[in-house]
Length: 246
Length: 227
Image 1 (tube, each protein chain N blue to C red):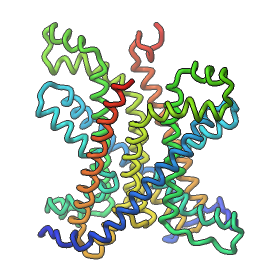
Image 2 (tube, each protein chain N blue to C red; image 1 turned 90 degrees about the vertical axis):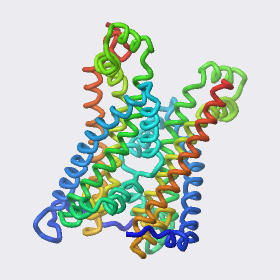
Image 3 (cartoon, chains in turn brown, purple; image 1 turned 45 degrees about the horizontal axis):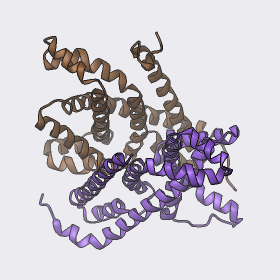
């Protein structure tokens, strides 16, 4: 293979001369983290609400929740990204006006966060529903028999248990979200994968650029894994298998 | 802004070509990914530690980086590797479509590996011992006793993964391959008809994936009754 290795390329100046290539990678990483964090917040809040209403006994609420999950699960994420960035603004003129007048990065950020947040919310809703339904029926009944309202039963009895149960699947959804954020490069958002490819195109040192991105993604995955394992230990319920034999 | 159905009708032949590529890519990647995924699963469960660690490393690497980045990696590496193998003077042109097929087979192998590993581990250990006691060797025990049952148990999960794969193939857009979405996107940009084309693509994907996952659910219920 004739390939010109040059690991020093990260310390070369970019064509516009005001930055080094490693700074591109770092700024890409920051955008990846910003998009993921914002989308994660939306996904967790919406996902919990949708997951909860799918376990109530109101048929129309359950249907609404099911429709939400099916809608976001059955359209490829990339197509959803295009819908949020190119199609939906066409139907909301004020949004369209804002998107064309502001800096492109803000419009891209908004579309990417909404897209990833809602997509992930459908997946988290599924986990939360499964978590609640894995609890014995008696817990809900006992709560109601004690005189708690339906909201109180969820707040004090069901959700504290269900959220602990769904921590492991939530961890893998969080990692999926971070990986999925790379799809935002298709609408021009300059996140990590975008920046590493751009660096490759400018320098022809694709190997070094992609390696940097790969190592960063692996580091993020490992960090997220450790953090969630810590959360899991802190939140473990004594007496359950994950809580140890105390 | 009027909704122009005519642009969709006019571009149907081109979209159909893209759709055929999407199906071909999905089918090839599913079959190839299942084949290599099963081999990987057997390697991961091997008692020969270096092999198990190598397989685990490959699977974990593939699963911790985004598919987009994997596509970029292969798109860049494939010509160099082919050049290394054939000893040609300049990298042979291989094309985005073929690159995508190889990438998806190798990427999906990691995901199918985890499914097959769970499938193999769901088989009672006594069956392995029984197979060895009958005098079967490793490949015979795997091929005739363990894998047929593992496949059967995992059919719904394998099919669900294939539906996810069907959706993920749309990502070949990033290396400019003309799949279903790629075809629609080319028309959309040529005719400035983004709304019509992307909505049409979304509806088609939704209807197909919804139907397929509904069928898988039905199958799952039937299999669950048998066991």
